[in-house]
Each structure stands twice: as structure tokens, then as C-alpha cells.
Image (cartoon, rainbow, N blue to C red; front, side, top):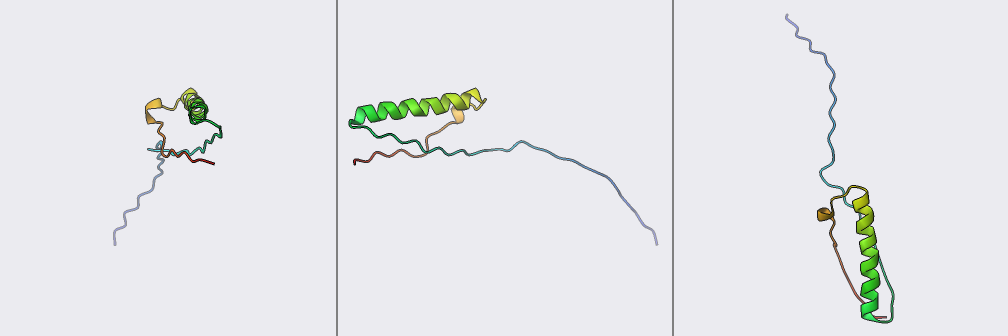
Length: 70
């Protein structure tokens, strides 16, 4: 009987295709315009921070946006 024996080692690595980060940002203000301005400032800070960490700005998206009255 013939026997074929194969032995070896291998290694593989790959970067992930997608990483999803979720941030909840909220602002409370008396006036709608002031609330939106504050919120936009916070979101811009998040975008700037992610861009500083070499995240492509074109890939940063807002997934949900809601306004409610209290």
C-alpha cells in the first residue's frame, strides 16, 4: 500500500472589511436652533476625532436623527 504524507504550516491575515462604531449624542436646549447648533458642534467634534484617527471622512455617516419636545 502506498502512502502520501503532506506536512506544512500556513498563516493568513486580513484587515476587516467594515467596522461599525455607534455613538449616541444628545443635547437639551430651550430653542430648536440652539439645540441643533450644539448637536452639530458635538457631531463635528466626533467626525474630527475619527478623522484624526485616520478614518476616511467619506465613510462616516449619521444613521439616525430624532428631535423630540419635552
